View 1 (cartoon, rainbow, N blue to C red):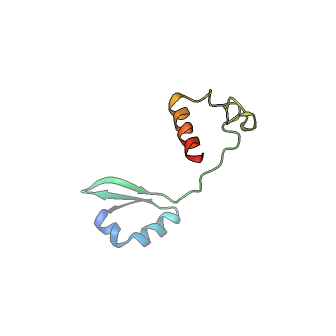
View 2 (spheres, rainbow, N blue to C red; view 1 turned 90 degrees about the vertical axis):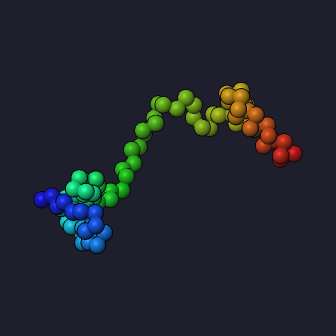
View 3 (cartoon, helix red, strand yellow; view 1 turned 60 degrees about the vertical axis):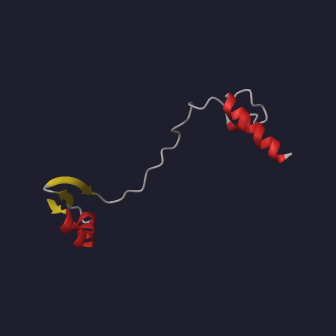
Length: 87
């Protein structure tokens, strides 16, 4: 069942509306009679293992971070500034 609730009413009944949502009821909050927000239970994001598999050009272990030839000019300039600060 869908429950439509005006924003002013939702402010006063938020705890109850959350409980109803967690019990499976669909709650939609309206503003000036128009639906603006749907309350939904939080779901922990699912990890997708292997999402980047085959999309990285090199393994991290193979990257030579001392070689800046693969960086664009702005990154190379930034690295030089950092190195000057360290010396």
